[in-house]
Every structure is written in C-alpha cells, then in structure tokens.
Length: 384
Image 1 (cartoon, rainbow, N blue to C red):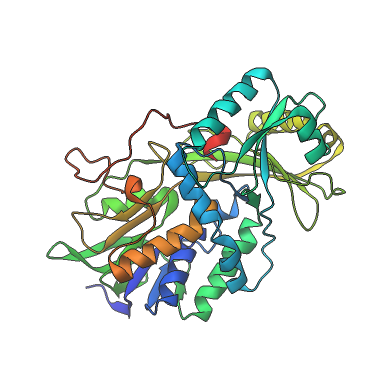
Image 2: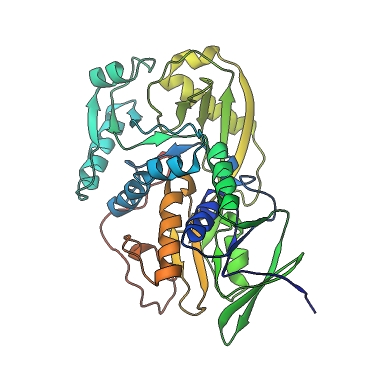
C-alpha cells in the first residue's frame, strides 16, 4: 500500500516556466500547492529555450492575440518576482531576406490585423537598417511589433520557483509521478516514487511528458516532442537593439543566441553538426559580423508540440479535477497559463479567451467550441 506523504489542494506536475507560473498564481489565491518535477525547475524545455517573449508572427490571429495578452502580463509579474530576469519588451523583428519573404510577411500582418490589439507592421529596408544596426545590407524588409521582447529563460523560471517557495508552495524535485488516483471518476491523489499526495486537483504541465501523465487518467493528448537546437557565442559588444526570430543578443553579456531547428526525432536531445551548421549559416546571412565570434556552447531542447500547433488549456471533461496546460510557447504564455488555470481552479471560469485551446478539442465527440477560419498553422520560425 502506497503511503500518503502529503496533502494539497492542488498538485502541479512539471516545474518549468508554465508549472511554476501556475503554482505561483494558485498560491497567490491562497491555495496549498505541491509542485512536482522528475528533475528540477528549468531542467527541461524552460532551461533550453531561446528566450523570446514573442507575439507578432504567431498564427492564427487569435493565437497571436492570446500571446499578446500574455506578453502584456509580464511587467507586473516580473515586478512581483523582484529579480532581474533580463526582461526587455521594446519590440522585435522577423527579417525578410528576399521579396517572397516580404510578401509572406505582408500577408501575415494583414491576417493579424483581425485583432484590434495588434500593433505590428511591415518595415522597409531603410527602416530596418536604421532600427537594427548590424543586419545584412541584403535585407529587403521585416515584420515588426512593439510588443515583442526577450528575457533570460533560466533566470525567469528559477525566479518563479523562488517566488513559489516564498508563497508556501512545496517543490518536490527528483520526484517521478507513477499514477493518478481517481474516486468515482474524480481526481483524489497523485502517486509518486516518493509516496502519494492526497489532492482533488491535478494540473498536467509536464511538457513533452504530458501525454504520459494524461494516459494515467485514460486520456490521449496529441503532443509530440519537437527538438530545437541552439548556439551561444562568446560575449560581444552591443550590436542588436532588438531580438529577432532566430538571433538575439543577451542583455547583460552581449552574447548572441542563435537558433533554431525544428526536428521530429522523438525524445532525442542530442545536438548535430548538420543542425549547428544550419543555424550558424542563417545567423551569418542575417548578421554578418557574427562570423567572427566563437561559439562556446550548443544545446537542444524538446518543445511539447500539439498536433495543431496551438496550446492545450483547460479541464478534461471526463475527469473532473484534472487540468492540462501544455504547448510549445511556454515562456511567452507562462503568465497567461498561471492566470487562466488559477481562475479555472479557484472560480470555475476565466475571462481570458482560452475557448479555442481546450484539451478535449480533438476528441471525436467533443462538444467543446473550436475557433475556425481560413488560417493554416505555420511552421518553423513562426511557431517558436
């Protein structure tokens, strides 16, 4: 018989940026929370992340709007953390290196304007060269948004974890979930390799491990790991004013972070020569001076990618008390995940526009409303 070691009003599984944000927001609402991770905070995708707080190239337009709402929550959240996480939200660009890319950018900006909150626009070549010194003279233009930015994802996630502990959250690292206990179809506990935790509410924020956790309650989550490789250079003088998709310069040290790949290789987190070569070539093409910098480290992380590219947010209809919070843009969306899940768990509802992202939307007989439209889910840089 498994011994009960703890009791909590909510157990959050996964101590990345998403799980920590959810635990923090719940603790602010007065809930007793246990946060479990099979490794440690920031040990997986949140610690192997490019570090963008990215908005304007997310599609469809309503997903961009969700990302924008979350991005605007960042200043107040970071102020509460009272730590320097290197947050900058002064704008961001996606460079267009030929006319075809510029036309695609124009079409994307036009679609995004369906949101009344959107402030992005296209920049001419001259505007780009004036706004972002250091980019290639071959640039044709860029899409631009004043709502984009970047931060240090490891510093941010660890700051959230420390804020959780100050609020009374019990964090259990090196703890593996082995089962979810149900009583009359409802959540009543979590089984781990350290013992059981009695709880009526579980939040599955386990990233690429989320499908395994969902299977414990008989639900299939269509989430696949997507490998993203990245490089970081030696420190360099300040050159870039703004982050760009695929290349940014860190706030404190001036190091360039270069990325990223999109590879469907299962749970393989190895870096490859082909991936690193592709990343370096793309960076040199856009910012020629990085050619002279030494790369000091390469790494790879696994993004949890739902099959339609959009996040999964909400309670499973068939398992009361079991919530899902999973998606590939966890850094950008972490403030919103925290607010939305705390609203749902504490109040039973939220005013945030999460209807299109219900985790049961793929079920054959689901009655969950799904946003429809002519947009297609993008790949590559736009999905990061």
